[in-house]
Length: 122
Image (cartoon, rainbow, N blue to C red; front, top):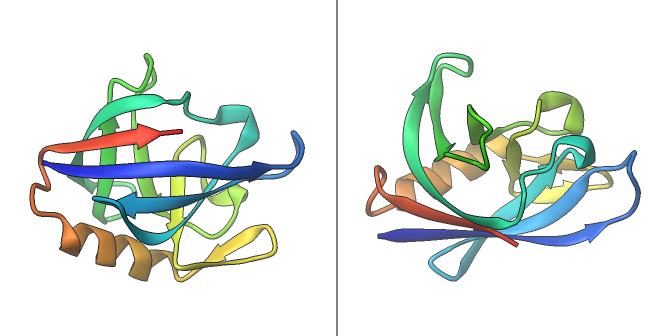
């Protein structure tokens, strides 16, 4: 079973994004960005690769995220690109992240168990 860990690194204020790093089985795979006002609570969730009709691509969907639905790890570059999901990118540029599609594709390709993922948010 694959394990994805999202470690939040810093959070400056309520108007700025939450920055983090994402690891797969202990290996860094990119950076993350979340909205402060809709952040996912720290915890452990079941995830799976899911064909998102909204993005027309595979994303990682978190199941039972503390009563919230449709929570995904998906591409995007700024907090304007999310309604409460986790964005993934290859690197940061100020309060944005870059190369998000490549980062997500790389992460999904590396999964050994795409339908059975443990996602821990710290």
